[in-house]
Length: 492
Image (cartoon, one colour):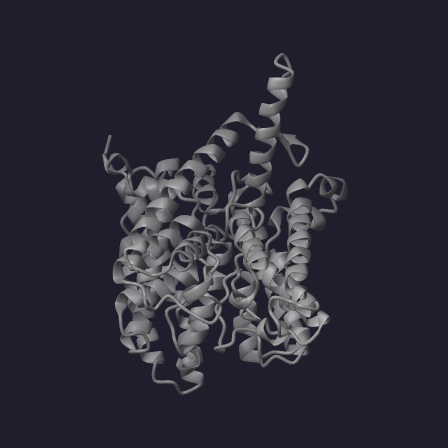
């Protein structure tokens, strides 16, 4: 392990967080909110400490895969701890564990919260809370790489942080790839902000909700999430969530006018197909309330006044959980068993690889399905040799192997987390969906952690399990496991 290269890069990133903290600091100054002082002190201290660490020069500047994974995992934990300081120092969050939980939830774009009254928080902290979504959406280290000197070794950092079974450069240099990603990300975010303002959402709310939508995070500025805004705003956010759940390589192909390659975007096509099928199923499940002799008896129980509302909110909520954003317009915890079952299933599927969304990723689901079909084919035709193809290209054996190992590691962590969380004594649905919501970076689950609930009542141990799950889920598990391995830290 090259310890100095790790410290050097961590220092650069701590300094970067200090600079990013200046944005909410300036908002606090502009709005005359006293909380700006805690933000300013945290920002200044981070810049000083980060600069000191960044000046520790390594003898060897090479970043191998091992260092890339460790830097990635460490910086997400450190960012969460530093980002939590203003919440705790101002007294807006009383427990430091809760403050770290809230900040980790922001950076990992999970959107799970311990806050019982979000509207009581000052706007400068609400901005920082939502801004963490935007920072974490595309990736903390990808942002740094956009301004760093490019090298082949830095691809190890990008691969460690970017979601999905495989990550390749869009353009020859890592720096140019990072700049391209953030250019697309920024333009789409600004477009979303403008659209929301035109639709009638206040400017501050539009910025915060655009950050939450772009990062597929889900932190809002109102207790009822998106429910209090007009239909136009809800539709814009629905479209926004789905677009940010698409692999950003798809947008690069559009920019480069490689329209023939778009036809082979199997993951994107499957992503939208799953979304529409799931949305229709959820709509059908909620529309049962309008039928004679409905088990609901009164359609007001599920919160709909007419069929149009059922369609609108069903499509919104499926987009919200599938892209792992976590916004809500209705309390889907009150819906029937079938709609809720579909919602939980798409929580596991998630968005596309290379997007800001979480979950297992559509590309992995496709690979798993094709592996099963290939295995069946081998039993029927033992002499046949078939390769698995995705987006018109053969999937390498290494990618298939890591995809399978990811699933095993995912299951082990999920089961272990669930067992620990169950010691809190809450019902199984609450515990199961709480782990599901955190490891898949979704936010809300069902029952106690539903759209109108939160994670405040869980024990400190469970909250640290959730923090681990959120970071592990965002980084696709391996960077965190490598960081925790004793062998990683040995010099030889």
